[in-house]
Length: 190
Length: 173
Image 1 (cartoon, each protein chain N blue to C red):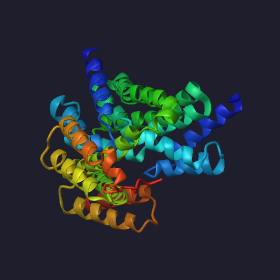
Image 2: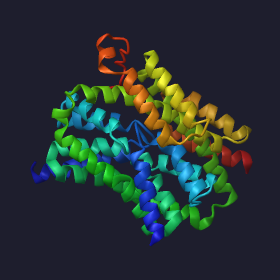
Image 3: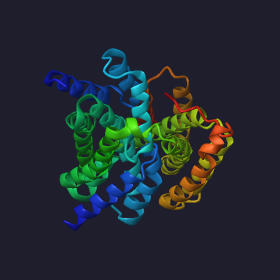
């Protein structure tokens, strides 16, 4: 990749990070790198999205790294990561300093409590939408429900639950069953 | 020094548990940073999550917030690096071979098997945060109103969140 393109890669990813405040980040990224720039095809984007979701870590960062790597190898991946993470990290560091320095006066505390409550609304909505899109078949629904109950209300260890459910879910979604179309989950959002 | 090391190990550990997005790791993060290490209180944890949602970039930047509380600026940096660097390296390595790997049956099985676990963990994360953030009639009303408002799909989330903050500030003022 030419130097000029590496610069515009950093600009696009930084812009995406800043513009996609409050959710829908991969949709923004799609709009920029597939729609406007035409750097990757839609199919390549979906491949990278899948990769970013099955690997551990932040989905946004993983997606940026995968697309950055596709565009410009290791340098592209490194710059893409810096571009999506660094601006927010600096801003949050400043906010944290402000938050802990003032101990937040009662009025500021109420402000944040209201914002946190609204974030819960957002989080609940996003989860519901994703669940509706991804959980069309019974095995998936069962796995999601048990995982939720175990980690949420029952407060079991996340590691333990992931380990057990990975085995259970892997078995429920094993290829032979997929071939028979029993688990026919095709609902992963593009 | 041991503080920084504990921060690094804790957030590295948490980053590896991020399956299908950051929200799902919130129950375990709460357990580690509030209950076990006492770096932040529950209140600070929830506020930090709200702030990280208002900040551009990945939601997992809450690591920086907690790290700052535990050990100042260097703590924030160490926690952020531990959260993002190792998993990003893994992503780059896998991305390099992904075209070959994704055709294999196991990759598709892994994707299908992990998706519902990720959703379940997300719901558990919403539950954990909700238990701390929704604690009186005002916060409950705001959470429900925000959900209703956002499901219409017309209003950007950041507007809803800021307006809710303003309402809470005025009502209790």
